[in-house]
Length: 205
Ligand SMILES: O=C(O)c1ccccc1N[C@@H]1O[C@H](COP(=O)(O)O)[C@@H](O)[C@H]1O
Image (cartoon, rainbow, N blue to C red; front, side, top):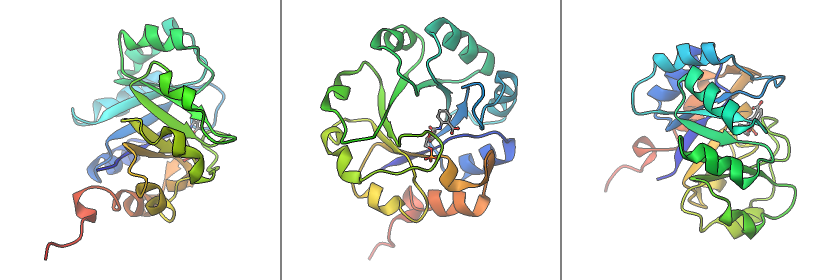
């Protein structure tokens, strides 16, 4: 069953709602200067309010491994997402401490060589992170055999079903469930997460 990560969380009420609706993971943006950036101390306050079984993901863009590890500790996060052009050696260094999701941005069909990158989860995103930009789903074909493929980029409650037909490990959404940048829309969160998990299964018989 495909899982869901809700990214760009900045408020405790959004985090609680997403967790209550069955999200597998929440993402916190740690790339300074981007519109959903949140200070590690604020992330830590939100994470402290969550249950023990949800993954909390720190999203980094080209941050050197030592700094990633320091920030992860300060923010009390559990998974690292590398969203830039990080070399494989950086991922290997970080993986000694945390599971790593590596993101590749699609401007053309996916490159099968990405399957060899040392990571625990392989994510694909549109060309501009957090912008709601989608791409033709056929571009994912070379990666569909990855056991932990996470599909992001321009997802919304309206187009989610087309992605679920590909049966990825997880989907990841940010702007598609927002009322405005940094603020999640409760109705959109419900529409999105309601399509995943046991509640979305048809009635037996
Ligand atoms: O959301 C951001 O501002 C952001 C900044 C820096 C790196 C990644 C960022 N977001 C990532 O983009 C995906 C897709 O976003 P969307 O659903 O298309 O709006 C999001 O899930 C984050 O992982």
